[in-house]
Length: 225
Ligand SMILES: Nc1ncnc2c1ncn2[C@@H]1O[C@H](COP(=O)(O)OP(=O)(O)OP(=O)(O)O)[C@@H](O)[C@H]1O
Ligand SMILES: [Mg+2]
Image (cartoon, rainbow, N blue to C red):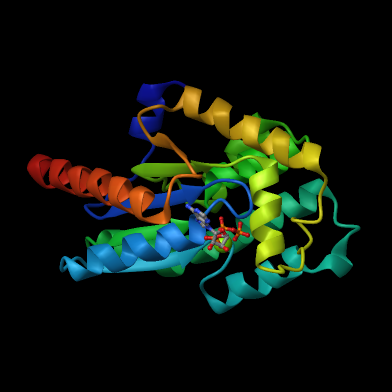
Protein backbone atom coordinates (compact mmCIF):
# COMPACT_ATOMS: atom_id res chain seq x y z
CA UNK A 1 0.00 0.00 0.00
CA UNK A 2 1.38 3.46 -0.82
CA UNK A 3 0.82 6.81 0.91
CA UNK A 4 -2.00 8.03 -1.25
CA UNK A 5 -3.84 4.78 -0.49
CA UNK A 6 -3.46 5.32 3.25
CA UNK A 7 -4.87 8.84 2.96
CA UNK A 8 -7.88 7.72 0.95
CA UNK A 9 -8.51 4.96 3.44
CA UNK A 10 -9.00 6.97 6.66
CA UNK A 11 -12.76 7.70 7.03
CA UNK A 12 -15.46 10.05 5.70
CA UNK A 13 -16.56 11.63 9.02
CA UNK A 14 -15.73 15.06 10.44
CA UNK A 15 -14.47 13.61 13.72
CA UNK A 16 -10.79 12.80 14.25
CA UNK A 17 -9.49 9.30 14.85
CA UNK A 18 -6.21 8.82 16.73
CA UNK A 19 -4.60 5.48 17.61
CA UNK A 20 -1.64 4.42 19.76
CA UNK A 21 0.59 1.49 18.88
CA UNK A 22 3.73 -0.20 20.17
CA UNK A 23 4.92 -3.31 21.99
CA UNK A 24 3.78 -4.12 25.53
CA UNK A 25 4.69 -1.51 28.10
CA UNK A 26 5.53 1.16 25.50
CA UNK A 27 3.23 3.71 27.13
CA UNK A 28 0.11 3.44 24.97
CA UNK A 29 -2.41 3.43 27.81
CA UNK A 30 -0.79 6.35 29.65
CA UNK A 31 -0.50 8.47 26.53
CA UNK A 32 -4.05 7.63 25.36
CA UNK A 33 -5.45 8.75 28.70
CA UNK A 34 -3.30 11.89 28.84
CA UNK A 35 -4.27 12.88 25.30
CA UNK A 36 -7.96 12.35 26.06
CA UNK A 37 -7.70 14.45 29.24
CA UNK A 38 -5.72 17.23 27.53
CA UNK A 39 -8.24 17.47 24.70
CA UNK A 40 -11.22 17.38 27.08
CA UNK A 41 -9.67 20.23 29.07
CA UNK A 42 -9.61 22.23 25.84
CA UNK A 43 -13.33 21.67 25.35
CA UNK A 44 -13.27 18.88 22.77
CA UNK A 45 -15.65 15.94 22.91
CA UNK A 46 -13.43 12.89 23.30
CA UNK A 47 -14.17 9.19 23.29
CA UNK A 48 -11.38 7.03 24.76
CA UNK A 49 -11.47 3.33 23.85
CA UNK A 50 -9.19 0.30 23.71
CA UNK A 51 -9.01 -2.42 21.10
CA UNK A 52 -9.79 -5.19 21.84
CA UNK A 53 -12.42 -3.93 24.27
CA UNK A 54 -15.12 -1.33 24.82
CA UNK A 55 -18.63 -2.73 24.34
CA UNK A 56 -19.67 -5.72 26.46
CA UNK A 57 -19.44 -8.08 23.48
CA UNK A 58 -15.92 -6.85 22.65
CA UNK A 59 -14.76 -7.14 26.27
CA UNK A 60 -15.97 -10.74 26.39
CA UNK A 61 -13.97 -11.52 23.23
CA UNK A 62 -10.97 -9.72 24.79
CA UNK A 63 -11.04 -12.04 27.78
CA UNK A 64 -11.04 -15.11 25.51
CA UNK A 65 -8.06 -13.64 23.61
CA UNK A 66 -5.96 -12.84 26.68
CA UNK A 67 -6.81 -15.94 28.78
CA UNK A 68 -3.60 -17.97 29.28
CA UNK A 69 -5.72 -21.15 29.32
CA UNK A 70 -6.41 -20.62 25.60
CA UNK A 71 -2.83 -21.44 24.59
CA UNK A 72 -4.08 -23.82 21.89
CA UNK A 73 -5.65 -20.99 19.90
CA UNK A 74 -4.70 -21.07 16.22
CA UNK A 75 -3.36 -17.87 14.60
CA UNK A 76 -6.42 -17.71 12.32
CA UNK A 77 -8.86 -18.05 15.24
CA UNK A 78 -6.91 -15.33 17.02
CA UNK A 79 -7.09 -13.06 13.95
CA UNK A 80 -10.84 -13.53 13.55
CA UNK A 81 -11.55 -12.94 17.24
CA UNK A 82 -9.60 -9.67 17.16
CA UNK A 83 -11.57 -8.60 14.09
CA UNK A 84 -14.89 -9.66 15.64
CA UNK A 85 -14.14 -7.67 18.78
CA UNK A 86 -13.09 -4.67 16.67
CA UNK A 87 -16.18 -4.77 14.43
CA UNK A 88 -18.42 -4.40 17.50
CA UNK A 89 -16.26 -1.61 18.93
CA UNK A 90 -16.35 0.35 15.66
CA UNK A 91 -20.08 -0.26 15.19
CA UNK A 92 -21.12 0.71 18.71
CA UNK A 93 -18.62 3.39 19.66
CA UNK A 94 -16.04 4.57 17.12
CA UNK A 95 -18.23 5.16 14.06
CA UNK A 96 -21.05 6.96 15.95
CA UNK A 97 -18.51 9.19 17.74
CA UNK A 98 -16.74 10.14 14.48
CA UNK A 99 -20.10 10.84 12.85
CA UNK A 100 -20.91 13.24 15.68
CA UNK A 101 -17.58 15.04 15.20
CA UNK A 102 -15.86 13.74 18.33
CA UNK A 103 -12.18 12.88 18.71
CA UNK A 104 -11.74 9.15 19.17
CA UNK A 105 -8.56 8.03 20.94
CA UNK A 106 -7.99 4.30 20.65
CA UNK A 107 -5.38 2.22 22.49
CA UNK A 108 -4.23 -0.19 19.70
CA UNK A 109 -6.10 -0.81 16.43
CA UNK A 110 -5.54 -2.42 13.02
CA UNK A 111 -1.73 -1.97 13.00
CA UNK A 112 -1.47 -4.25 16.04
CA UNK A 113 -3.14 -6.98 13.99
CA UNK A 114 -0.60 -6.57 11.16
CA UNK A 115 2.36 -6.65 13.55
CA UNK A 116 1.20 -9.28 16.11
CA UNK A 117 -0.76 -11.69 13.92
CA UNK A 118 1.33 -10.98 10.78
CA UNK A 119 4.94 -10.32 11.81
CA UNK A 120 4.50 -12.14 15.15
CA UNK A 121 2.38 -15.18 14.27
CA UNK A 122 3.37 -15.38 10.61
CA UNK A 123 0.00 -14.90 8.90
CA UNK A 124 0.09 -13.16 5.51
CA UNK A 125 -0.07 -9.39 5.92
CA UNK A 126 -2.16 -9.14 2.73
CA UNK A 127 -4.72 -11.46 4.30
CA UNK A 128 -4.67 -9.39 7.50
CA UNK A 129 -5.27 -6.17 5.58
CA UNK A 130 -8.40 -7.78 4.11
CA UNK A 131 -9.50 -8.93 7.57
CA UNK A 132 -8.76 -5.43 8.91
CA UNK A 133 -11.00 -3.93 6.22
CA UNK A 134 -13.83 -6.08 7.59
CA UNK A 135 -13.15 -5.61 11.33
CA UNK A 136 -12.61 -1.84 11.06
CA UNK A 137 -15.70 -1.38 8.85
CA UNK A 138 -13.27 0.44 6.55
CA UNK A 139 -12.60 3.13 9.17
CA UNK A 140 -8.89 3.93 9.65
CA UNK A 141 -7.08 6.48 11.83
CA UNK A 142 -6.14 10.02 10.80
CA UNK A 143 -3.00 9.70 12.94
CA UNK A 144 -1.23 6.80 14.62
CA UNK A 145 1.48 7.25 17.24
CA UNK A 146 3.97 4.38 17.35
CA UNK A 147 5.68 4.49 20.74
CA UNK A 148 8.96 2.71 20.19
CA UNK A 149 10.83 0.95 23.01
CA UNK A 150 13.04 -2.13 22.91
CA UNK A 151 12.39 -5.47 24.54
CA UNK A 152 14.69 -4.76 27.52
CA UNK A 153 12.79 -1.58 28.35
CA UNK A 154 9.48 -3.42 27.96
CA UNK A 155 10.68 -6.17 30.33
CA UNK A 156 11.97 -3.61 32.87
CA UNK A 157 8.66 -1.75 32.89
CA UNK A 158 6.55 -4.89 33.18
CA UNK A 159 8.65 -6.32 36.03
CA UNK A 160 8.51 -2.93 37.81
CA UNK A 161 4.71 -3.15 37.63
CA UNK A 162 4.76 -6.85 38.73
CA UNK A 163 2.53 -7.45 35.73
CA UNK A 164 1.41 -11.06 35.26
CA UNK A 165 1.85 -11.91 31.56
CA UNK A 166 -1.39 -12.42 29.62
CA UNK A 167 -1.56 -14.91 26.71
CA UNK A 168 -0.09 -12.41 24.20
CA UNK A 169 2.61 -11.18 26.57
CA UNK A 170 3.90 -14.65 27.44
CA UNK A 171 5.60 -14.87 24.03
CA UNK A 172 9.39 -14.89 23.57
CA UNK A 173 11.84 -12.08 22.95
CA UNK A 174 12.06 -12.80 19.18
CA UNK A 175 8.27 -12.51 18.88
CA UNK A 176 8.45 -8.93 20.20
CA UNK A 177 11.46 -8.00 18.08
CA UNK A 178 9.52 -9.24 15.01
CA UNK A 179 6.61 -7.07 16.04
CA UNK A 180 8.87 -4.08 16.53
CA UNK A 181 10.33 -4.49 13.04
CA UNK A 182 6.77 -4.91 11.72
CA UNK A 183 5.97 -1.48 13.14
CA UNK A 184 9.12 -0.08 11.48
CA UNK A 185 7.92 -1.40 8.13
CA UNK A 186 4.48 0.16 8.63
CA UNK A 187 6.13 3.51 9.40
CA UNK A 188 8.00 3.33 6.10
CA UNK A 189 4.87 2.32 4.19
CA UNK A 190 2.59 4.97 5.68
CA UNK A 191 4.72 7.92 6.81
CA UNK A 192 1.82 10.37 6.39
CA UNK A 193 -0.29 8.55 8.97
CA UNK A 194 2.14 6.91 11.40
CA UNK A 195 4.44 8.98 13.59
CA UNK A 196 7.21 7.10 15.35
CA UNK A 197 8.17 8.47 18.75
CA UNK A 198 11.01 7.39 21.00
CA UNK A 199 9.04 5.83 23.84
CA UNK A 200 11.92 6.32 26.28
CA UNK A 201 11.38 10.08 26.36
CA UNK A 202 9.63 11.35 29.49
CA UNK A 203 5.86 10.89 29.76
CA UNK A 204 5.49 14.69 29.78
CA UNK A 205 7.64 15.31 26.66
CA UNK A 206 5.73 12.67 24.71
CA UNK A 207 2.42 14.03 25.94
CA UNK A 208 3.22 17.59 24.77
CA UNK A 209 4.49 16.47 21.34
CA UNK A 210 1.43 14.29 20.80
CA UNK A 211 -0.98 17.03 21.85
CA UNK A 212 0.61 19.64 19.52
CA UNK A 213 0.43 17.23 16.60
CA UNK A 214 -3.22 16.34 17.25
CA UNK A 215 -4.24 20.00 17.60
CA UNK A 216 -2.67 20.65 14.16
CA UNK A 217 -4.62 17.76 12.65
CA UNK A 218 -7.87 19.09 14.11
CA UNK A 219 -7.10 22.60 12.76
CA UNK A 220 -6.39 21.20 9.30
CA UNK A 221 -9.64 19.24 9.32
CA UNK A 222 -11.62 22.31 10.34
CA UNK A 223 -10.00 24.40 7.56
CA UNK A 224 -10.98 21.80 5.00
CA UNK A 225 -14.52 21.87 6.44
N1 LIG B 1 7.72 7.56 28.85
C1 LIG B 1 7.83 6.71 29.87
N2 LIG B 1 8.93 6.68 30.63
C2 LIG B 1 9.05 5.80 31.65
N3 LIG B 1 8.12 4.92 32.02
C3 LIG B 1 6.98 4.90 31.29
C4 LIG B 1 6.78 5.78 30.19
N4 LIG B 1 5.57 5.53 29.66
C5 LIG B 1 5.04 4.53 30.39
N5 LIG B 1 5.87 4.16 31.37
C6 LIG B 1 5.66 3.09 32.34
O1 LIG B 1 5.61 1.86 31.64
C7 LIG B 1 4.59 1.02 32.17
C8 LIG B 1 3.64 0.64 31.04
O2 LIG B 1 2.92 1.80 30.60
P1 LIG B 1 1.52 1.62 29.86
O3 LIG B 1 0.65 0.75 30.68
O4 LIG B 1 1.02 2.96 29.49
O5 LIG B 1 2.02 0.82 28.57
P2 LIG B 1 1.14 0.04 27.49
O6 LIG B 1 1.82 0.29 26.20
O7 LIG B 1 -0.28 0.43 27.62
O8 LIG B 1 1.35 -1.47 27.94
P3 LIG B 1 0.42 -2.75 27.57
O9 LIG B 1 0.72 -3.06 26.14
O10 LIG B 1 0.95 -3.80 28.49
O11 LIG B 1 -1.00 -2.38 27.82
C9 LIG B 1 3.95 1.78 33.32
O12 LIG B 1 4.56 1.40 34.53
C10 LIG B 1 4.30 3.21 33.01
O13 LIG B 1 4.37 3.98 34.19
MG1 LIG C 1 -2.03 -0.70 27.92
